[in-house]
Amino acid sequence: MNDPRKLFVDERLAGSCVYCGAEPTTRDHCPSKVLLDEPFPPNLPVVLACAECNQSFSLDEQYLACFIECVICGTGDPSGVKRANVRRILRAVPQLASRILAELSLREEGQKTWQPDMDRVRNVVTKLARGHLDYELSIRLKAYFMNK
Ligand SMILES: [Zn+2]
Image (cartoon, rainbow, N blue to C red; front, side, top):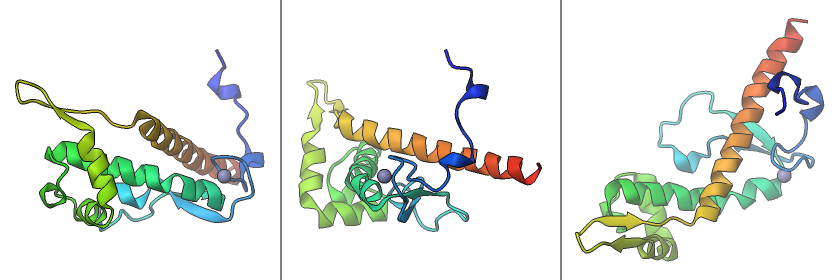
């Protein structure tokens, strides 16, 4: 087991895409705005990312935000979800609404069972973990180097 105090984390990691290490060309909100409702929190964390990585997560994040809202509201029908942002997405992307609805099954007892696309869920969770880790470590690194 690696000692977390001895992990390779220092300023040499700054200035690269947090997800792949390439040269960053964008700033990525972490968490993505699709997972939040307005008004967004002040000082929403951002991390550096290359355009390819930043774009590559968008559809999975959109899927997960919609899936979670559908589960919470118990419906795949856009008119039945509470979050306005998700309702707008489901209406604009009917294929997504259909896909999420197809992931709902009803048991004989009438209970609803949702089976998400776990590859997409895993992709978003990993992205969030990397982004938050980078953001938190960056804050600590800045504080560390400012106190030196
Ligand atoms: Zn990247």
